Length: 192
Image (tube, rainbow, N blue to C red; front, top):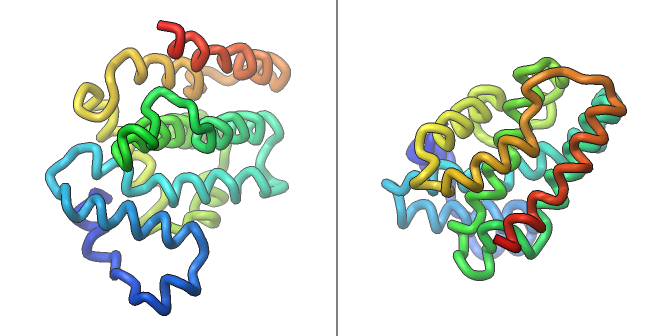
């Protein structure tokens, strides 16, 4: 589901409703407003799902059916999104700075559902966004992978892929070691 379909589903809130909602809805609203002004921007198609992907990861991390190795990967992705220091800082780039956060979450979710580390029914159960969770994950992942240079640069894409993609299944301990060893990718990218 791309930005134009999200615009059809999103209805702006009046002031009283907005005061009653939590940060998640306010965050979504700010992104939708930004996207509405940039309807032809490839970045808009990606950043529009950031709040939904983030809440999906939080809910999955809290689900007892999700394997511990998956929770470790999710925790690292959540930490990256929450970190004020990342490859495309929101403080400098505004909403466009969410593109790397969306990419981290899309790559991880796509990878988890593709290598059967996570039952798609569990993903769908926790989805708060519009449309089918699996279709949205696939659409966002494909949009990023086919428009890398318009959304994030190819070097950032390669690092995110290397860190958050499960191209092969491995034992829990080896997977955990692999993920933790990749945490240094941010340090390396900051130093280059």
